Length: 108
Image 1 (cartoon, rainbow, N blue to C red):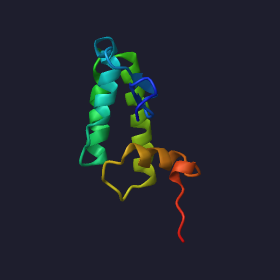
Image 2: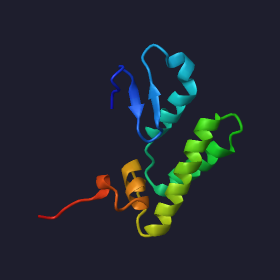
Image 3: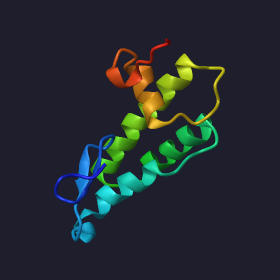
């Protein structure tokens, strides 16, 4: 989603990336780029997040984002033991917040 100032807003990370300032936002770009990685299974994604957290050189923002994502993935796996696909951020959110407006659907 674009912001009114011409940047990009990441709702999941709650950050904004502004045009012309990408060099000063390298840590935030790394967080967003990690979202683009789609694993084939949830176990691969959990392992990838654990590897990222084991790296002492990652930024505090990336560490916080990855640990929150890891917690959501582990909760999703616990709630859906028969499901092995890598869930999307929306699936993770809806698993944690089933009554949220974004997660409701209606059958006519």
